[in-house]
Image 1 (tube, rainbow, N blue to C red):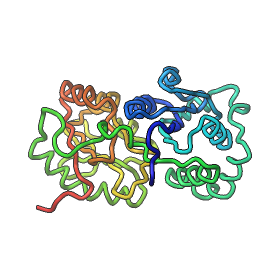
Image 2 (image 1 turned 90 degrees about the horizontal axis):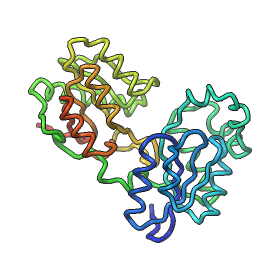
Image 3 (image 1 turned 90 degrees about the vertical axis):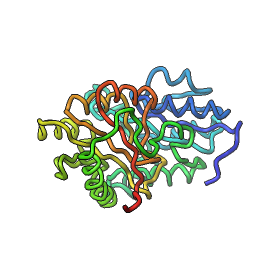
Length: 288
């Protein structure tokens, strides 16, 4: 996909969390103007100050997203950030704020009634935006320095037993990813103790810790070589490291180039401080 050269603006469709701010900073470091649309009630309040232009948009307003981005001059956009479903459900005005526009309703009826998985949702959004003249691009393009790299990334190296758990669990993780089951598994002594499903990584970490009270387990996370990086790239940050330490995990093994480490230097330092090893593993490790 051809990405426009600076100074063509790049749109930023922003949900919550730290990632949209990192993407905005990365784009600006490349000399690209950033025009942001923030999903109402979701984006970080500091984000508008990192964008050259910014406007809040409705969560279920695809038509509004594309109109605002095109008016700001963006023909390419990056979509990142979380959507807090709990915040939506407890919003007393949600019935008014979350009414979908016509484009969203049509996309839902034609594409998502029978398949609501994340890849289907991303594909439907990307195709609809493209029809209006806005192309979604690789969300990691401006933050290559935040991606997991190969090898031990912390000062602490994994033990022989943890190495064995990674070698045992990695093919299982890749199979799980290909089947669309989940992006993470927990392993202890070559035994799979938890598999991530719709509950998300944080809940899965808590569950793995309750199932393996001895600790010393390893969390493996990835997305597979064919993952669509226009959105939903697996991400870890300080909160993840703290949760792993609290749950007794000894190691976090992540896929090289397909997992984002938020504020990478600080997060890896925190992992060292809390005694959690972080290792980058290729999607298809070399056979010994």
